[in-house]
Structures are given as C-alpha cells and as structure tokens.
Image (tube, rainbow, N blue to C red; front, side, top):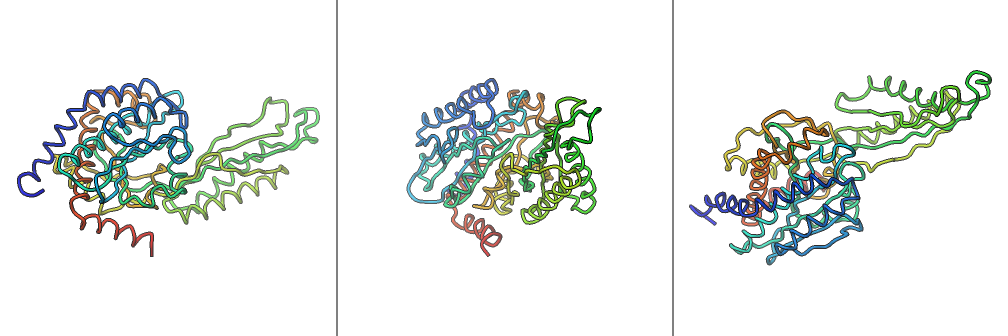
Length: 397
C-alpha cells in the first residue's frame, strides 16, 4: 500500500464509517436509553454481539466465564492479533455518566471498518472486539488478565470519551478497594455506656490515623473513603461500623506497601477502641496503566493525519482495569472529545453529551485513528516489532 493509495486510506475509512454511521448512532442511543450496571449488561451485550455477528464476526458469548462478556473476531490468514476492547456498563442513578455507551460503539465501529478494509485489500491478521463488563466495579479485564486472555494478543487498544479535546494515553493509578468492619458491643448510650464497645470509635480512629499518614505518602498517592455503616440510633452504642476505602498509587509496588500501612492504621484503631476488626476487598483491585509509547506515537501520528492537532497529555489520578491489560500486552488507552466544552465525568451532563450530534465527530476521529493504526501494524512488521520490544523491555527483563 504505497504512494497515492496509501494517502487514500483516510478517505476510504471515512467513507466506511459514514456507511455505518446511522446504525452506530442507533446503537449508541439504545445503550444510553437502557443503562445497566456492571455484570448486568445483558441488553448491551446482546446489542453489541448482534451487530458484530451481522458483519461477519465470529462471536463467543459468556466469554472468560462472565455472562455479559464476549469476544468477537475476524481472521484473515496469519498475522498480528489486535484486540479492541469495549466497555458498556453504566453508573447508578446517572446512567452512562462515564460514556461507556459511546466507548463501546467507537470500539465496534473501529473493528467493523478494519474488517472491511482487511477483506477488500487482503490484509493478513486478526481483529477482535473483546466486551469487558463492569469497569466501574468488578473490572472484568482483571479476571481476563488472570486467565491469560491477553497473553497471545499483540496489541490492545481502546479510547475513552471525555470533554474538550483528544488526550494521549498516559497513566492510571493502581488501586485496592478495602473494607474495614469494626465489631463492638451495644449498650444504652446514656444509662450504661461503660458496658458497651463502640464500633464507630474504631472507624473514627481509622480516619484520624489515615489523615496522619497522608503527610508521609507520595503526593501522587490517594487514600479516600466513606463510612458506609455507623450505627442505628444515637442512644445505642453501635456494635457494628464499616468504612470503605480506595487506596491508589502510580506504581503497583508502592501501592502494596501503602496498603499495608493503611491496614496497620486499622489494626491500631481497633486496638485503641477495643473492637474486633475484619479487613476485606469489596471490589476488584486494579494494576496501574503502563502506556506503550511506541503504540501511542502511532495512534497520535494517525490522529494528526486526520487533521487533529490539539492532543494533550492527561494526568491519570483515577484507576481502570485497562491497567491490568497493559501488564499483559502492549496497550494504549487515550481519550476522545464528546464536545469542545469542559465536562466532568460521572455526571448527568457527561451522559447527555454522549448522544449529541457533536459527539460523533470525536467518535469518528478516534475510530479512524485506531483503524489506521491497526492497518499500519498489519502492513508493517517493523512497527509491531518496535512496539513489542518496548513492552518486553518493561515487563520481561
């Protein structure tokens, strides 16, 4: 694919996106109007797999032993194996306030137009869409990574919606979700408080100890929590109190040490209050995202070919199960704009932006940039070699 025809790739892919645009829009709006929480995405999973089967993908449902996960693949001969990951879970109350309806549709559109290009020009390789439920909670990608799903994948990509502009794939925090349950003894809070053991005191001690700990943590670390249960009535010494915390850090090794310090805060809090303590994980823990710089440079180069020049760095203080994927194979997780306005994630306004006409511009740019990157990898073994060398130097020393 050389010379003038190489330059026409953008036009060909743009025409393919436009060919499916109405159908993609219908899918996006259907998902928006039918939000489902993590591991309950039955309608979304069916809608995703129906359109992929319609366009010649081989679909495996209940993938990786998860009812609402799937894998859809199209293979043409031997060659690189590229996975485009799709999310489609929603949030409580506000629906698709993280934009996973648009996220999943962008992934599907990429795979479909790459498949069409592969068939038309006999590109050798395999394009997959892997449907990954529950990013907001249990993080299906974590279990998939443990099962080895990504071990034979050459490259994994996905692009998340945001506001304002395109952002490069950067970092995300490794995260552990800890639940601290303090158990005490009830008593009348006025008549016989000395006969009780106040479980809420254990939780309050924990918060105070963690607040003291913050001075000795890296500025990039985050420890934040809530009291999810603190008692039933003001005149009863509570015998049960529960606190839920997220502990986050840029590097997985640092997170492990920080988690132990937080647990020690809890143990001290229990000792000081005379309570019993139970520590559990209430959600799946995530590894930190390690962006493959060579792959990100390829994606950015293709965005610029499309005329997108405002591409910014993005600090990653949140956490995503895409981090676990990045420890298994070369991975990127950049962002595309739904609007030129500032948006705050996990809000009604963010959800509404996903179905506005303006959103489809960013979706198309992200889809075409991913598609162009896939084609580059299928066509040029040297590109994939450099991408994998970077990954191997990081993880396989």
